[in-house]
Length: 370
Ligand code: IPM
Ligand code: MG
Image (cartoon, rainbow, N blue to C red; front, top):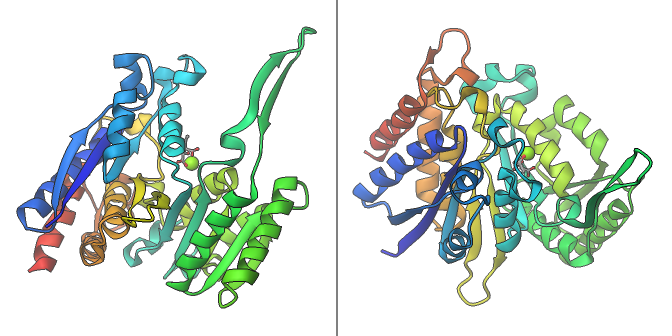
């Protein structure tokens, strides 16, 4: 059996708490002959800043480049509000995405049956929901230059961020969306603001061309991103795959997260280009939620997004779809038993800790695996 090399980057806040549950899961899988995982740990974000005055070191970047997959917790917190901009915790995450060229961010929003009541939306709106947001992750306003604040000398300052997209960046993310749609319900909705932004005009044009050239069998629809956000909460089941740029994807995926009951439920995968020889993609897996400093250290955090992110690693990096299915079934089964972390509690359910939830999921895996 091939050995899978993982780099674990727990980060800050609840990151280490939820990562601890992945570590237990990995140990359980190793012990049960489900893959051979080797792990290394690294510092990222504020934790790295405290030790090295940078948000990620070159040595950790080298480990990330060499790993088969990076498993990432969360970064940031008020403790680091005053650190220099280039060393802020989020810079470590952005460097990983950029240097590893992880341009395709997959954020599936699935509403587990047991959590229908946890969503702020009505049952009929979210019941059975299964959509996939594909966010462009290495371009757009996150990385565009210039990115500056200039003192205008008259008591005023001017801040500039640059939204920039080249054709190839839109083509490759569109292909990811169309290819994944073919394995699902065969529909892609592309979201931009072509009524206001030149990048939106080009985005729309390129997605349409890629569709015409390579994916005519897939249904393509365009929505303006603001109206798309509204449609996401009005009737989310109209969507299958949503493809959008870096900033809109950031916002729309947080919105989609709440459809599933809690931000604590949403996993993500960030993938690079497939190596022509090995077919392997550089990859990082992280929960969509942040470091939640308000609940950090209390054992209250929901580890499901983190565990499900590891599940995405099984599926997308290690071709272990069966094991990924097993993990998802185990999560659903733990929820069916009425077990909840505080963020997803509802009447008649039992509130448990981060560790208890991790252990409950593993116990269900044990039971389901027979
Ligand atoms: C996310 C986060 C990050 C982002 C932050 C932590 C930099 O919100 O992954 O959605 O904005 O991309
Ligand atoms: Mg975000």
